[in-house]
Image (cartoon, rainbow, N blue to C red; front, side, top):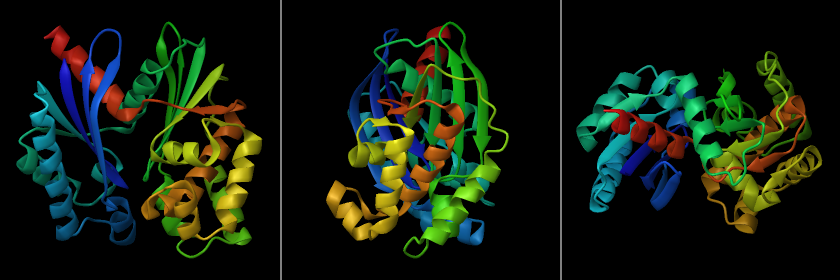
Length: 292
């Protein structure tokens, strides 16, 4: 089944066109655009008309691109902006009008489950227990699943790379702000009492950016080194050194700090996942179609 997933998140809008079957997900086309919806929500509590229009315009373009690949269905999913904005319903209406497709604001549990399913589906092996950490701009989900049962533990935290950046790193990071951000994250993660996994995957935009900076494997020592580097260099130089967009260079330090604190609690190195939220959403949509 050929599926188009349009993902409207706090930092970016993304398109995945994929062929989905019993074996897994084969990517056909991917696109991304920076929207910065979460930053507007963080400052004012709602999305201004120009941001609603921008999101609708990008979604319309992505729906047309998906249609050019002869997809059987297009699904629009909205993550933290739909939950956290005072006018999230306006965002949903504008996206529906722009695309003519189904538009869903994901619950925290749905977001975590899709991220887990998408990350696990792209693995070459099947660990006994798998943790998946999905760091978005507005929230972070941590899921642990068992090989034969799927997810058995899921927690969502209202903290993400963009929200943390807006609160602590509007200017150039300093040692004091990094320490304050760490304390804030630790307070938010107080109830992260996940069962110990045998493998762990990091997914989301932060994870993809960190792979460029540090490689696919992220253990405690490597994350500490990366955090020290990111905190000591201007964002413009980080962006140029690792081929990152300026918007991602702005939030990568905050995302790395969140991942480091989750890693400390899980006690196992992360690998950067090859799949995540959009792949999981495509798999879920294919299952529903198959059952109909």
